[in-house]
Amino acid sequence: MGKASKESNVVMEKMAVDPEFDLMYFMSVNNSNQIEQGLLEQLETYWKAWKPLLHAYRFFRPEEEDKGYVLVFFNGDVEDAVEEVWQNSPSSGMAAHNLAISLVMLAVQGLVPQVMAGACAPLPKPDKDIRKKFKKLGLEWRDAGTVNRNYAVFTPFPYAGGCEICYLKDDCPKSAYRPQPDCNTFCGVKLP
Image (cartoon, rainbow, N blue to C red):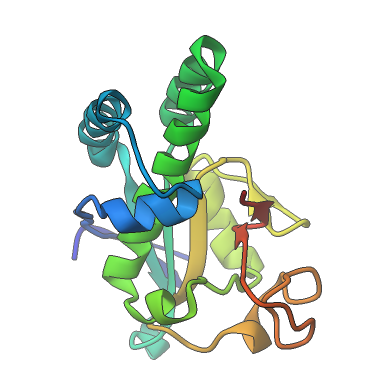
């Protein structure tokens, strides 16, 4: 674990993440069953450049140190890079977008392995103390259940349940409250 800072009664601790590229996972997110060699080489370049730009933080209250939340996100640099790729080639841009999603989700799965079983990271609603920590990180919580970053996941750490605790349960097609076959949401954004 990394450096911790305290404000009010919430501790924010930087975490190390080092996700490995998982081609099958990427292909699932990208909704593809094959990838051309040129695109794969391009994606490898992005992966190596973007992986060090991942940010991961754990939030908890000192009196409940064994439970809290984890936040994994990219700052605007990766968003800008994806947009630039998208402008040059929509198909490569979609692959770059899905690679950024994969990188964040694989990092989350490395920290909270149970999200892999459900193929979903339930989104809790952060309280005002945690939202203040978000602001320190340059993030802004939106009532729609997102932050001002395209690639971000906020979920309980350790795993603390699925649909029943998720802020998006009323709109998620996977929710037990709205039965559907597969979840296709990523932090409030519909995936292909």
